[in-house]
Length: 307
Image 1: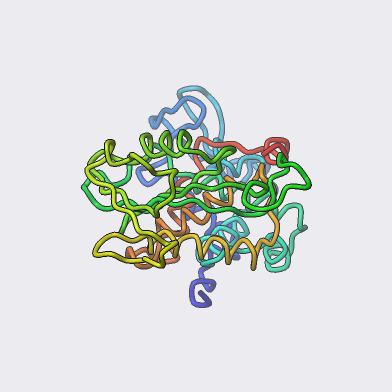
Image 2 (image 1 turned 45 degrees about the vertical axis):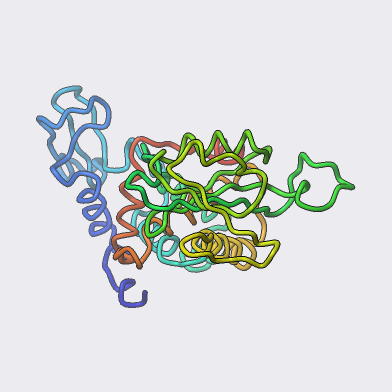
């Protein structure tokens, strides 16, 4: 990572802005107000009052910069620091805490926390298709984390924890969801909406997955209670590895996460897994992929606080 940090986009505002323009507008600028790509003129430097990177749209007569219409809009944080924060969050396998960002970037903890959530918003994959469309095995499992504030205080065990259902396509992508209730109906609904009927479903022997073979090309299980972990191609090793990275990051790096923000942390770990080195994605490419997702999204302080 140290070699990557020598890139001028992490300390030069002009380089950072031009790099973001190249990511967002690979075919030239377009107006975020009206969507027109015709008649866009750069007006930077024509007056002292013009801010760097200002464009004028001849169609709607509006002005804009590369951050307008993105999660970076109206941010007073320099773009070079946005680039560095995105790089650190994208390239750290188990995450980067807001306290660490606050120290490395020289900003307040509150600003670092808000920046991290904005970056996670950019990591959300839009219009993702079903897993296992090519017939690959898809592993499904559930896990528990933290404490569910809706659970009764005296109650202990899994029922008092936050509930997560995750899916991993072998050699492909992962998908994870925070659910309020963990039962057969919830799991079935998730599987039918997220997994292709062509997929070979793999799970443990939990009753949550009973009868799933009717919806998919096949359904194999392993009996963990009887210490059976692999039987031919039947296993859930990929998803257990995914959960292992998630929990180590949440416990070792983030340490605490409320239920209203859990979905954003799940997005972060899901994004890094889906853009992992094993799939040939470098740290730089992963950072750029996160920045491509900033468009068309806004995340205000109020929305962040509300989850």
